[in-house]
Amino acid sequence: MAKRRRIKRPNVELKPREEVICAFCDGKGIDPFGILSSKSICQVCLGKGKVYIEPPYIKCAFCGGTGVYLDKRLTCTVCGGKGVVTVPEDAKECPDCLGTGQAPDGLPCLMCRGKGVV
Ligand SMILES: [Zn+2]
Ligand SMILES: [Zn+2]
Ligand SMILES: [Zn+2]
Image (tube, rainbow, N blue to C red):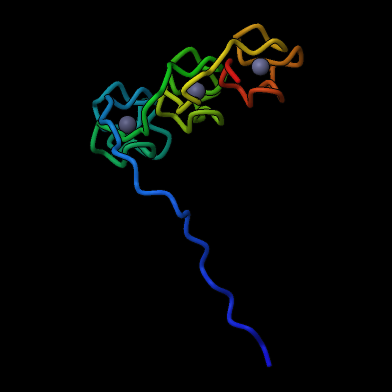
């Protein structure tokens, strides 16, 4: 008999999330690069100009808070384009990348996953 796969739910209460201005579109809600059309909505905030992040959060080290991945017109893979990332309460500077979030090859640091803190 096949078991039904249960949907895993985190057993922590839903934490309050804070509203921040979308870094990718700078709160405009429009795709800053207009890849599809100049009126394309921002894929990060879906046109709202705002995103939600679970505190505590810091500016994304990898993209420097821009939400853009290495000027390649893509959303930052670390913060997903939000420009901010949730970090542990007692976050410390990553000893591997010294807080830059970048590995020597320009990819997100493996130790902190691009956040710059661990
Ligand atoms: Zn946006
Ligand atoms: Zn980022
Ligand atoms: Zn690191």
